[in-house]
Length: 212
Length: 76
Image (tube, rainbow over all chains, first blue to last red; front, side, top):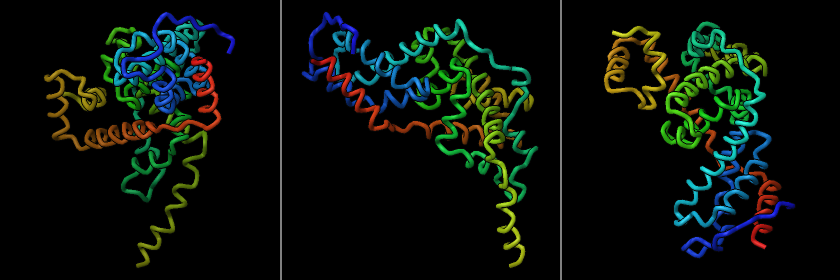
């Protein structure tokens, strides 16, 4: 660790806990959030968050607020990194996005011809790592909004505050992000062969029912 | 009465409780008679559950070790 840390505050919050004790308890949660926001850059993001939090530990007055405090710092670090990336960011194709509906796509393509709950079965193809992969394929500004809203459960107002963006911008990113996520789920299923053989696998059950 | 396209466009905001009372009422009025859009709503709820299920705390042991080392360095 080569960086010199300049701290002008005290060693502990009023409860008497040191920064290390407070931060350690939140590492798994911070890493989860960082992994969703930045994928392979997660560890680096948590490190940056810890350094920034350590410098500002004096501003934390209640141990109970430590979770929200650390989350905000991590999102701030991510936001700053995002701004740097945005200068050279790739644009994703939004062509036809408004018209895309995964619900209709699944119904029309009908990958489960023997099922009466094909939409549920389609989503059942995705394990946790698949969903993670789909999220990582989205442009960061949309992924960030989706992660904070639908995985972490923050309100749109809280997200707007964290990202220092107007509420309308957050709502627009969520709208596009949801559409992109739906389209990416279908693309991922096709590209990774999730749909291959599902109809065939279903057939024997159906035959068995008919035979009874 | 709003169209299916309008109802579907507002579904997630409806589920997020982001709509105004007036818009909310319009979506509910539409859902009350449109079976297709009720299917869309159920699917949107399933998609939300799929995302919410990602809320699991898992940290690889080696990553945890390195982050704990960083904390220890900060305290030394």
